[in-house]
Amino acid sequence: MELNYSEVDRIIDAALAEDIGTGDITAELLIPETANGVLQFVNREALVMAGGFIVPLVFARLDASIQVEIKCEEGSKLKAGTSLIEVKGNARSLLTGERVALNLLQRMSSVATLTSHYVEAVKGTKAIILDTRKTMPGLRVLDKYAVRVGGGQNHRMRLDDMILIKDNHIALCGGVKQAMYLAKAGNVANLVIEVECDTLVQVEEALAAGVKRIMLDNMTLEDMEKAVNITKGRAELEASGNVNLQTVTAIANTGVDYISVGRLTHSVMNVDIGLDVTYQ
Image 1 (cartoon, rainbow, N blue to C red):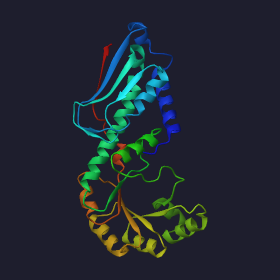
Image 2: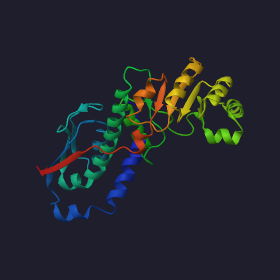
Image 3: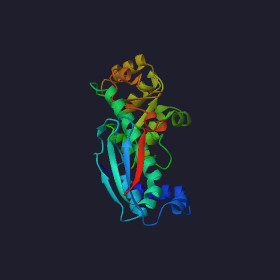
Image 4: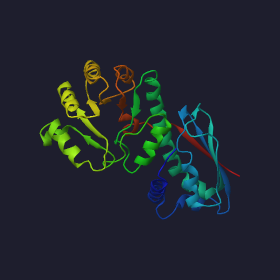
């Protein structure tokens, strides 16, 4: 699965620098310099594994001799009590790197697991689950990768990937028509243009302006259904705003093409993965 590894390297380097500082004082004082150990990552609850590849990258920065065995494939749906990853090598290095490795693995597996629940909830409809830019600052490339592992798709990565005309843009431009005129005139890169609509009147305006993708922002189910009927396939429709696992199925059943879910990344709760280390 495509991933920007230069960004991954940046994240790991920053995380290790943040965590270690000038050195792991406790490990240096308590653990013999030549001692070897085995570190086991075991999930304590069911999850979709994402980010296993991060673990060897973390430990390689600390000690090139450390051996990492990833026992489960990315995207695997795993029962509690599964041995995910085994790490062998210098015990000090294992203790120094364990928190960064675990933090990133937990975060990514949590996002993938939650995404898989949303994907399952819309199964049988045409709706595609999308993420948003409400990611953890500095971790966007990993958050969005994890969404893909969980079966979702990515919305824009950054502000320069597409033209998304939101309510504040429309207010400052004086309306949908004016905003679309300016967007089309300056769209030299031929980017996708999407317009956020709060009302059915705006949906009509967007269609008249030639918009091919419309975001239905915080609309009722009834208005979403009306928007689908008004549009009649002339534009793709994306439902957005306060989507959760209790509402997503009904939203998908309105006939929209996409459902964007900020909760996938902005308030996900970490899955429980345990770490146990023993001397080798």
